[in-house]
Structures are given as C-alpha cells and as structure tokens.
Length: 278
Image (cartoon, rainbow, N blue to C red):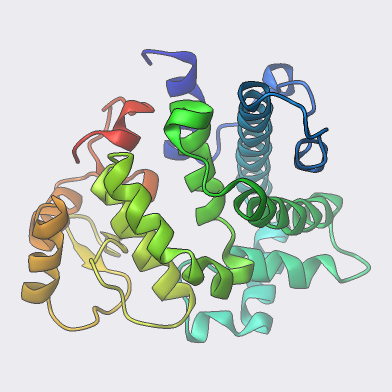
C-alpha cells in the first residue's frame, strides 16, 4: 500500500494505535554521542550519524504514542488519565495538545504505570535532545540529513510541548526552513497554530480543526486570532485552501492526518507529502 519504507514508518501518524515493532529499530545512536564527537570527524559522517539519531528518536516517539493509545483501551487507564487531565488544569487554556503535561504529572505519582513513567522520562530527554541538536548543529536541513530525518525532526519538534517558550523562539527559523526546504505549507501552518494553542493564544491559520461531535459536522478546535476571511488570506499567501474547504472535507468524512490535515479514508500518505503541495 505504501511506496517506501519511509512511507510505512510515517504512516503511523495516521493510525495512532499502530505499534512499531522493536525489530525495526535502528542501532542505538544517542545525540550526546554525536555532539561530543571528535572535532576531526567528517561533516558527512557527522550528518549521517545525526540523521540516524533523529530517525531513531522518531521511531521511539511513535512507538510510545502507539503504546499509550493501546493502554487507553483499558477503561481503568483511561479513567485515571482523564483524572490527571482535570488535575493538571491545562485544558483551561489548551484543550488540544496537553498530553505531555498530563503524563509528566501522572508519572510523579508512586502508583503511576511503568509505561507512563518511561514515557515521561523519554519525553523530557527527547525534547532536550531536540534543543541540543538545534544548539549544536542548527536546524537539520534536507541537504544535510536527508528528507526522512529532516521530516522526522519536525514531528519531534512538534511534540515538544513541554518547553513551548523555546519553540516559539524558533519560529523565525521555521519560517526560513519552510521557504528554503519547500515544506508542505500545512506543516508550517500547523506548527505555528500548535505553538500558539499551547501558549493559550489564538491560532493564525486555522489548522487546528476536525470533525464535530456528530457525523457530517466539522469545526475549528481553537479560536482564530481575527476571523475566517483574514485567516483565508494568510492561508492563500502560503498555498493553502480556505478554512471552509477543509471543514467541508471533514464533514464529508475525512480523518485527521499528520499536522491535522483532512485525509480521505483509504488515501496513502508518504514522506513526499511533507514536502509537496497540500
């Protein structure tokens, strides 16, 4: 069904409950090893090692998310998770991207499940790795680490909700990479909107949307900074269809795909979509 191994890997984002087999994991390559490599290491070798590290972190990230989705099938786990959502109070200003804060709070409890504890440690460590990569190498670009690792890095950055202030500081860099690496404008728009949402601020492009509570309905999940007409102008400037066009796709039964893109059921999604037109 998918055109390449990379497409198979990234398609996990469309099926949150799909586990990634540990047999497919890459050889361990930690970011600390790369950043402390001898100064005479060739740039090519360094970039290859960095690409492997990013891909491995992405695989681990996706495996954890899949395991957590499976854990939620247990009513007891689901109920306890909901109780920590309420305790955290994060939904008051961010009802969409609060998992990191919730699991971090839950993990501090003596009776927290081992999966929750491991995920909280992984999230904290991986988000620190993301920052260390940017600090040591700059933003990983396609020409340096390849399309797959460059795409994976965006997803890792997108999941780093626990240090949103740092992510906001990277917006000028993201805008430049969007233009120069020819990113899908949906990824760029959603990154901007997600960071605004986590900060409790209105979204800019209206990408935080999806199906409504009843079949045949759709809605924005977070308010706009102004109005739909102004948002549509901004969307057009970067190559996106109107908000209403996307809402209609959700009304017609589209699922929420990567970076909350409306994906028609049965449609393949591959790494090429990270860099192609919406």
